[in-house]
Image (cartoon, rainbow, N blue to C red; front, side, top):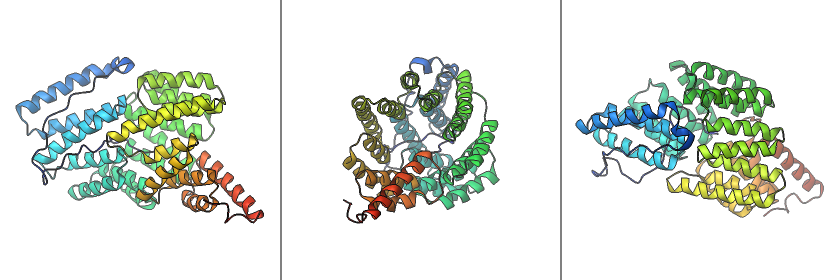
Length: 412
């Protein structure tokens, strides 16, 4: 679970910075036109008007970096709201590269670029860019937030905690509380995670996207700990303020799935998918089809998810872990292992990556490798329900193999 509260993040466009090339574009890519329910949102008209105003300012003064950065922040918000990442992320990077061609030491553009790399799962590069931003401004809470995220994804959890503590001291905020919540969850402290996320919600502006994100995450924490009624309340309250918030619809569907109300859940997920092109909504549908016993329909949906992930990959997003999980769910274990190992090569200490690989190896009856990755996946004391359930299955498999004297021979 990526914690990307400060800004949604993007992809690599292939453009080089000013130290390598003078061909960086200073053009401002247009807004992606919203469709359906999202186009009816109150802020959409204001967003279009503001972007047009900023573009006019930039046309009159191409060196107006403040106006360019304002466009960046709007496009970051639009990427989060619409889910049109394949369009917005390259557009955002085009603008950022333009700013950095005019001012190579611009802190805001540098830290935004680090955020973009985070969202594209280019975690090591994000960390390097964020550390450069930190040297430019060591007293800014935003950059510490990016460093929290980068270190989490790289499996540097102790360093992530240190960055989170610095962020809290500099500026207690929705973003800081949310990151503290996520770290507590990673270390298995669900009560602490819930309390921190409540603080994040309290710090947000009701109805705003960050507020809805935090409230939605609070709902997820309630759902994960079996408090379905409290989870449902969070999702319904979000939708009362922002009816087009697709992630709250997914949250409701998850509650309905937990209650085995599968048809209701599928209907709600379909509504969410019509609002936003988010692969995880379709992934949830596939899981429900599998629970209903319709394996053929589930596998067709998983292949649809693979196609969506491919589109993300073409825009610069690393999706190897997501492909590993999807192929595992579809029973295509050789493909799952290939993508899992590709991700593992980039971040061998991350608990989610090791969790995914442990399960692939277990399903392939390679208990030695399954145990090896499981040990890493459990090292923070995380208590994710699926991780604990799979850990128990792997341990039972190992004990059975040992009792049969075949633990070291039933491997691939």
